[in-house]
Length: 170
Image (cartoon, rainbow, N blue to C red; front, side, top):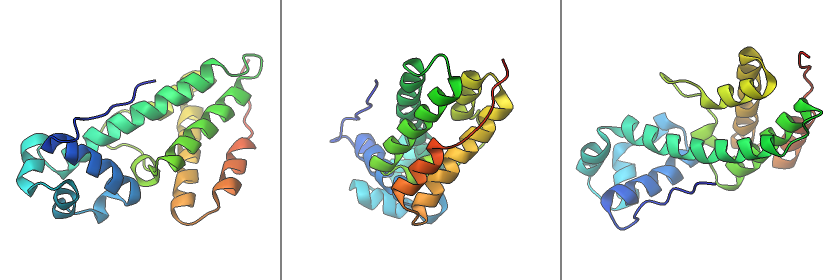
């Protein structure tokens, strides 16, 4: 399982670490360039130098965090119940949910990516043999993160993911 750890003493590394925290706590639109720079102890110019824009920084950290999420979910799918694919997918959803909650990535992972392929939906779609069902499951998973971000009980939300029912074509 990959763990990306930037060199935290470099301005780029400090920006990435700060952005993971800030974008994990709050939605993209609520975060300012000045706030990101201050959190990293750099000037706003460093954001533009290393990432081109606030969006570039966001996309950089989101891609890293999403890769760590998918590593965990793919691992859960690999050891899942091969006789009951739905049970394996539910386990992957819960593993991913617990990771996102524990690491405080609710806002960072709780919205679908824009302008690029939805890798979570693709992984889930491959696991269930249906791209459409993969998109629906990814949306349900993200809705669970949004519910927790809005104050829903973590245990109750996890339980809701565990009881998702869906049929798979034979």
